[in-house]
Image 1 (cartoon, one colour):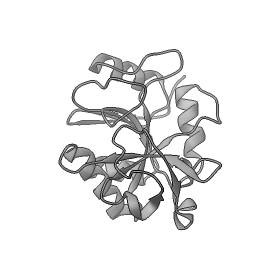
Image 2 (spheres, one colour; image 1 turned 30 degrees about the vertical axis):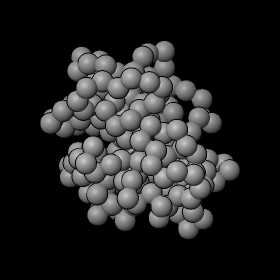
Image 3 (tube, rainbow, N blue to C red; image 1 turned 90 degrees about the vertical axis):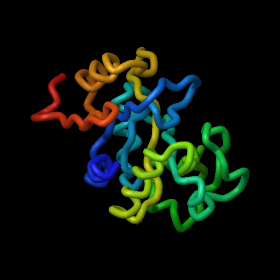
Length: 180
């Protein structure tokens, strides 16, 4: 968690592959692309990695017990990214990569007990940056399904401009320049 937080704080895009595969339309912290939410250009960077339209939004992941500090309106528990919340005005400029044009965000809350590794990642990132939020979008690229197994993760890492792959306990950094 600490090593990944350091990569994110350095504005690197991280392919995150942990545990059992997810089921459903959204990344929920098992198969994710992660990035720093304080960099407005990260929306475009992630959409370029995924090969999708630039207007497509990306989501903030936040500890459940910190969500009320950053977001308002609606139920704060949102582990499945089902609810859209207003981003408090004082946070909009601090996490621009995840704020929709109307000042909202579709959040994912992380419970410390249910997802201890994600919780540690968010805590470590906050300690480094003062931002308790990380960008989260699904780990896949255009025309491809969600990454499901380690072979898929390695293939995605080898073919997409992602800086770091976290595969279980292993952190793999790209050496040299991305070759297309």
